[in-house]
Length: 396
Image 1 (cartoon, rainbow, N blue to C red):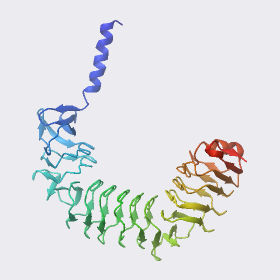
Image 2 (image 1 turned 135 degrees about the vertical axis):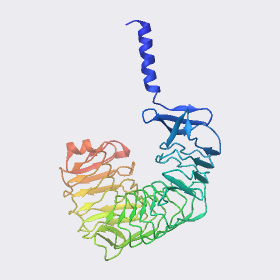
Image 3 (image 1 turned 30 degrees about the horizontal axis):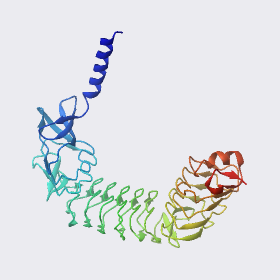
Image 4 (image 1 turned 90 degrees about the vertical axis):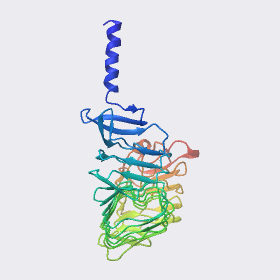
């Protein structure tokens, strides 16, 4: 094969990668790509510095039908966006992190979307899709809305919101890392999505209405809530729903069929599974003898926990159960424990320096303990292991 042929093939290969990739519209400062067999345009980004953005109905003679995922992610200079009637699909996180965005306008003849007072909804205004991140007013959701869309308020500056009785679902990431200090939740909400209020550090209290039946994974994680009561209606709580919060107590309505609390700690109804330990509690804790399983993320980031006693009835410790418990310096695993999930004791840094196993057959998930402990245990079995001066694990 001669040199010219090699160069030609290389160019063909390069073009094959470039053709479907992003292109640039010099007139509108947009990045875009062709979709639908090259017959339509998807906006994928913005290269300009304009504060007021107007999406064109067409580029290079082709209709603009879609705004891609994260297309305007964290474009802080944008203050308003106008969407034409041709756009029938808007991707996830398209306007996330636009912290100066105060208005989203939609052409009145758009078949799929609408706007009201600069807020983006579906056509019938039943789903609130995107609240402009630069707005800081106290906001009441219109009574027509039945669902708050995924990521609708993520990264926003909103401080207070009233959710009407018409709303039945709060989507994933809906209020994640927003500036909320107050939430009034209507009495028809049935589901709170995964990570819905994650990172709302200014939100110190929340009242969960009796209508709610499910709380998604990490729904309130890393928020500022200091107390919570689980109503009798809730039948599903995702892992880590209250992890890394300011909680000192978790209460459960006594008529709840699935969950219970004892001394402010969350368990299943029979108290066989320890589900969540309040993050801001300090000192030592003895797990009740009824418990047979420590749930995933149960003690996540409980850095003030200094000592834990695990009873002989416990047979499993879930993934990341004690992740980030930097106050623990030693742990005893009874022989009854058959399995320890991945990263169960990771994130304890150099502080965890003594581990005692009562048995030799405990299955360890990946990185269940830090610094290569698994390999040492597989050879050593039951006994006490230490890390002198933060070095390698050795069996005593």
